[in-house]
Length: 449
Image (cartoon, rainbow, N blue to C red; front, side, top):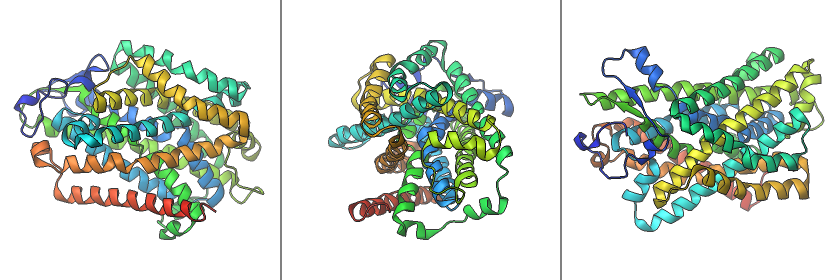
């Protein structure tokens, strides 16, 4: 729990309100007299656990397909999605700090009871879809780096995160340090690849210019929805509203506003780095593959094979595989944490982490294995993009309650969103609904072309 809620206006008290913060066994105390840098160093962490979900293998697949197929023209979708993600994740911080509840708990307590089960099921579908992408991505990385057959790699992923989950006994700061190190590794790999590629600056800047006609092109719309789902992930909204409560602030005047300010800085920095990684993937695909080959490269394994000869060094392919493995391992750890938060928040059911991990992964194993065994390795890219589209379709069911909660003064107290920010949040929610509606209409008609 961030602050003793009994003295806070607008807070909602409950004996279980602090449960999410206790899941990680400890919290980080922020001394009242700590300076700006000292406070920031203690606050940094939760947003990085969230940010890894924005650079998981599902992002790789959608950004690779977008860049290879359409060049830099969908780069603006990555930028817009990242800005929406920053806005929504700061709302999650606001909700957790103001109420002592995560988003799942708030839904159970403040929405009609009949909505609880459907919202929980939709959240679980999103988590399984996310885990599917991480599973396939990790298995692909093992194949690319070590030559491990894909079906064996898929089966091994059923147990890989059990080792990482063992780190939870050492506390939240150790987990955050591990994830930050993995994020740094991914970023470093792509920084080197950008130096090797030396992309055309004018083309990159042109790709940041929004193109409304994207909604009228079935193929672009499909990938745009995939990018949106891969960037603004539903389970991250539940996760962040809980993790922000692992920071224990001293009870003093203005401490809630200070907690929100530093949590927002943490979010902007972490998701800014995630944007650079996602943009680098699309730029790498556009600069390396678009217009240079007979057909677009939409498969991660094929991209790995082609990068070395196109960029003139075997280092490019190795860095690609290492970054993919690091991205898969870091994001699968946080997806497990999100799954526990969702189950406990909506249903008040708490499973041991290893049971929750195996349950989610086994649900993702079935479609992954069937795809590999029946359709072959080449179908994994399509499966990854599809998983991100599923995430996009689930997104409104998490975003709409979040925005509504943050606008309620009796719930949020002095941390209620200001009118201009609430209007912007509703506009983002409307945009997500419009994109998903256009996608459904497209799929119901001719589908992506």
